[in-house]
Length: 396
Image 1 (cartoon, helix red, strand yellow):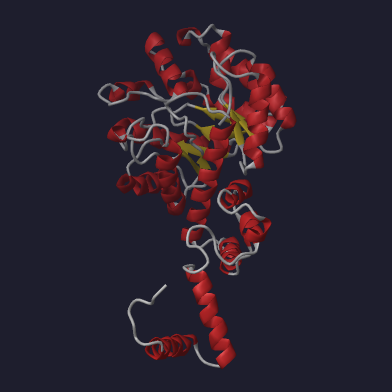
Image 2 (cartoon, rainbow, N blue to C red):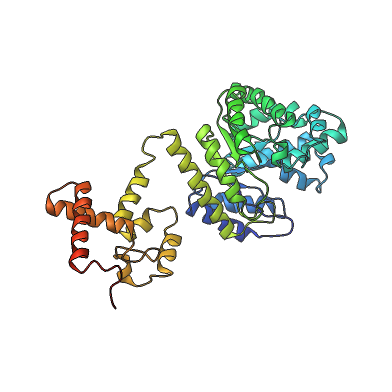
């Protein structure tokens, strides 16, 4: 997720964030701009992006009515959909599952409605005391999507914004409606993925995946995290990366990154990179846990390079070669250190991998098994100790 806000960022900065995110491995990018020049910002992101771009059209529609949710109309929203589709947007997030009857269910929540799109539509529903026009015009929206070959990301406007609200009636009520909307979109020939939470403690994550698969007919699930605890502002890329790895293992199809700035401010380039790398780790860990064919090849290649002290290969096989190299060079910057059989953690005499390598070499030279080599080596050291006088402390 990138995009400007009413108080920060420019077109140039957002295009650079997109370029930066894809450099570090983002498979798709969402432009969530809510500030000025939304159309132009999206245009430049689309022109420069090598990956699919998604948007939340209700944000621009809201801008067109001066930020007043109650002034939104189906016609304004429809025209915004067409405008963005003609620009070449690949998928739209549409919060059509936020129904009038679900809104009172959020009244006793710890954090209410935390989705921007969800809160916009909830306010519109209450202002007019009508069902959301996104829901009542769903078939019309599907027709537009089909005409322009745009995919749905059916939004989770009632996702929990704290672990206290996880898996509640409002969240799961909307998820069931997402399943209904999924079948209707498929009937119109439109591709669908379903958005999911949010903030969910570890022991409640599997239930989200199981219900989504059942109620949404195994449509791809796409989650923001989920964040597994609420105590770590500034580190929510980590709290959410834990949940992302777990829900990916259970069957989630796409993970939406969270940056260290989540809940705190608009992310900068460093935050974008930290978020992307964290989620590449989570996705890969999930692939390993699921037994995905070929997932472990890179792990094995890097582990072999590590054991053989091929430092450059170890750096280059990592998700972030620049950081890996800089951490190594922080204490051992000399070029010779790139071929040394130790790092600054253990030094030349306490490296377990170097010791293992020496044992293997000794075993090969003496034509014996590694276990026997260890035993023989111990005997030799014992004999050497006795021959030198069996003194516990040697004189300097």
